[in-house]
Amino acid sequence: MSKPSSSPTASTPIDAERPDTLLVHGDGRGDDETALAPPIHMSVTYAARDPADFADMSSRARHPRFYTRYGNPTHERVARLIARLEGGETALMTASGMGAISTVLIGLLRNGGRAVAQTSHYMGTSKMFSDLLPRFGVRVQLVEQADTAAMIRAIEADATALVMVETPSNPTMALTDLRAVAEAARRAGAISVADNTFATPLNQQPLAHGIDLVVHSATKYLGGHHDLIAGAVVGSEALVERVWETSIALGSTLGAFDAWLLLRGMRTLPLRVARANANALAVARFLEQHPAVTAVHYPGLPGHPQHALARAQMSGFGGVLSIQVRGGYAATAEFVSRLRLFTHAVSLGGVESLAVHAAAMWAGTLDEAQMRAAGVEPDLVRLACGIEASEDLIADLSQALG
Ligand code: PLP
Image (spheres, rainbow, N blue to C red):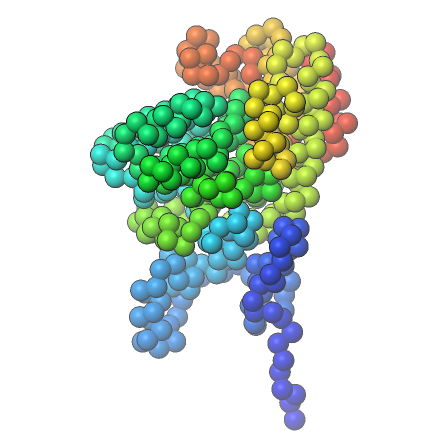
């Protein structure tokens, strides 16, 4: 006689509050799963049990088992974790950070509508505001990110549909006052959106400051290993559903394998972010004293012009800083080429430390004056600290500075 079967696994996610436990147990194991590593749902399409089930699958928004561009069980697991971390009701996964940002902007803005954004955003986001959205009749006003009063004036100057901020911003580490901007946007009836990629939800939760939607390049800290491209949009069910409706038309769908890699990477997010925060602070303190460095831009340093704001809205200051090297473009290029542990490569947020000579990316197309006008100083280097020992990172910077 066979024994009655009992399920040894939980079908509902464990309701952990602390991120360390949430990220290990909070995505939920299926009733039929005994494997600890989650399955990768590679199937594009899912069988209906009967006609009523098919009608439900095809009409319900964001059904996770209908057609993968609409939703997928592996997306659903990772989205649950990102939403909980950010304190949002739900999250939508996308194929990249730019997939998240472009889908939000195209989904929520209309011809003739007006958006307020910042002078310094991630390059792709700036391109959306300077080129793509105006081509579709969206009016855009850009404001310097540290100037809260100017941002509020711009929001109030005319009917505003959407406000986009990125804090800390790339590559100068300037901050935006999230609460002040969120309140101004709410008064004006505008949707506020924050790119929280640099900070991560462990260091900063924009929704708790009143922002409506958070976007991420999950390629960075959330994934954490420089081995996947992904994005996420987090917020209320109603707003995320509006964005999802655009996403199924635009088709920026995250691959199931990358969703799985992201889920795996996120298990260790708190350990990695804590180390990256500590490394960046140690490196910033060392470089601040170094005679070959003329400026260190890191919100965790008491000398940062917005340190008080950083303390008010961040619980950690992140793994990215930027510095200016004495001697101009050539000396800076030489410094970057001498680095051994910091790899000269774009991106950030992975276990390996990376360095980018911002001006070198533009050297072929812009002269020094044009770069300055674009806010890229010729001697500016962005350092993204990984999880190596801080002593080794400091030794590497020390030998490269000479
Ligand atoms: N937002 C920020 C702040 C970024 O740094 C990046 C990429 O570097 C993006 C968005 C775009 O992300 P992705 O490369 O995943 O499309």
